[in-house]
Image 1 (cartoon, rainbow, N blue to C red):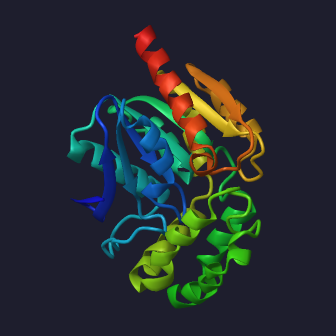
Image 2 (image 1 turned 90 degrees about the vertical axis):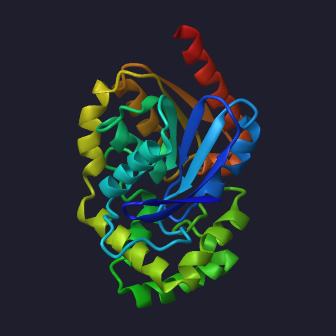
Image 3 (image 1 turned 120 degrees about the horizontal axis):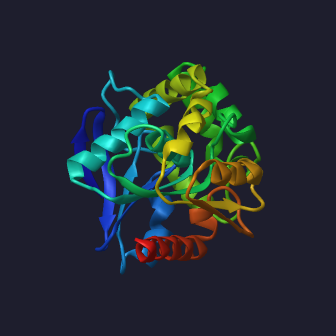
Length: 282
């Protein structure tokens, strides 16, 4: 992990491999390790940059005045690209990371050459499913009570419930348990998480507005979806692909929302094939 000081605070990120740049974004209560299996498969051909964003599993607390709305975190990603001097990137997002990718596609996408949306929040599906609604609702609690409420997530039986991670991943419980540690042990991370969840609850229609701008994104997009997803409807993936002028849609079986955890080899191959095809056309 490398750290970089940005306007909101210190953002940690992994930076592996050489070649065309992939920037990979995770979702709520996850960190950059979501992408470990994918980046291991791709590092021989791509430079893979995966930041840990302030979405509840970060280890470095943000500044008290940091903008932790979804729009604010999307701007933080753009700031990271600028500070690292990254251009012509393939921007990849899963879960709420895909929502951030859509915000960037609809706004300041000057450094983005192409995008990959992987089973993610879209349209009016925010907060997404039982999991997202339960988490955003719990963010109404004061940070100390939110911390007490989240302590039950130490139990595997609770993490595997549909209102927790049970409908997000089939095989990634060890990773989800690890992601929760900063939230369960650090008061300032709980403070950040509550702030982020309250900002998200205050603007649930941000993806509806972004969708209205997506047809103007004229670069290639891969929309990759879990066919068994119960949190992010596959129909939303098809709608996104239809909305974007240069998009293709593909599905993968035997996984839930967190495709990078459940099917990393398949996703790595899909990203590789997509970028190769784009380069061939170019």
